[in-house]
Image (cartoon, rainbow, N blue to C red; front, side):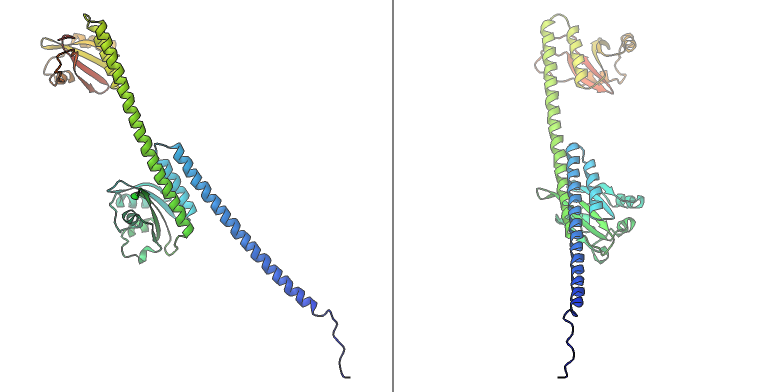
Length: 342
């Protein structure tokens, strides 16, 4: 019939097997790449969570000190944003102040000292972020006609800038800025991370403000209570010592010394043209003896004379043991009238 022998039925199968192996290898490589990418993303997310948690830990452990917070944020932002340097700034309503930095050389630090403090404007990413209250991302400062701090950029070897303002109730209180080589813009993930750090900085600033205000109020209340207690104690001694002035003066100078934070206290009383030491608190015996032998004379320019010639008004005409209390160094001096009741 002219037909040749039929080919063996299994001849084409090896080619199909080789093609299947290639496809399987490609799928494996694709799965490996996707797995590596997922593991990288997971590691970066964990690293970011760890950094933000560390900043929060620093905030909680430094309720009255912002510097450790700024240092922690600058260190984390430098690493996680893959930057060449990171700087943190505070804005007091008029001027921008550099308050923290990482990976800044001596030459770069000198350039920052020359550039700050300064007012908000368009001359840099930081100035612009505080002025506009928005994120400023300049991929290449060479293509930004408004960028003026080029000497500072050269000194710190960066050409790409990202600055995120710190906003409290919509008002700028500072900024965090990172920089790296020109034409290498920061990613969206890095921008979001820097926003998180800026928000944490605002939390820290507000935390310190509240703690400081609370501390001032507590100190004021404590001082007022101590003063009321001391006044009550003096009045108590006065009521028990109607005809004896010395216990009253002893109690008065002890409380005056303690409440003013002085180490020593003295009360002088006028005796003709001289001022004699009446009582003292915590004075060295040698100084007490020397003062008793050498009464103070008018015209010597002493704090006693100044106190005597600037009397405190006393319209009631009642007890006026001390005309004025004046401090000099670690001493408190009171000049007293000659009688408890007038």
